[in-house]
Image 1: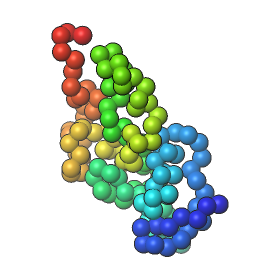
Image 2 (image 1 turned 180 degrees about the vertical axis):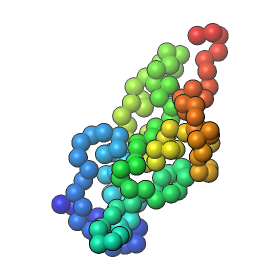
Image 3 (image 1 turned 90 degrees about the vertical axis):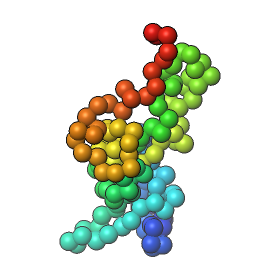
Image 4 (image 1 turned 45 degrees about the vertical axis):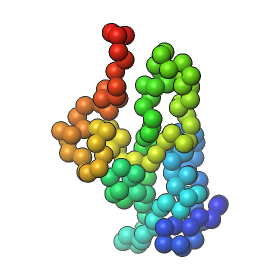
Length: 131
């Protein structure tokens, strides 16, 4: 079991998150970079992570791996050089909460239901020329 330091500098023996999902990649990176906090709540130890977009502390249940560069870039035939560049690369993923990952590009404040109603990918620049 690896030993990691939290944001307060305390050492913890924490198992890495299993698997190779986006969630596992961003959680394990947060462990390695000491971007987590450990708190005792009612006798149970909880690990919290900070959303990159809204800066709220969340547990692992609410974490998602968010693509910082749009996935549409990978699929765009005009951008032939970028094909496959963003697929599963860790540098393209950031730790986010479910609200921000499903929300709009405007991530400065806490999202309301109406502000993240539309899919984020639909707000990316659209190809010119009717393609």
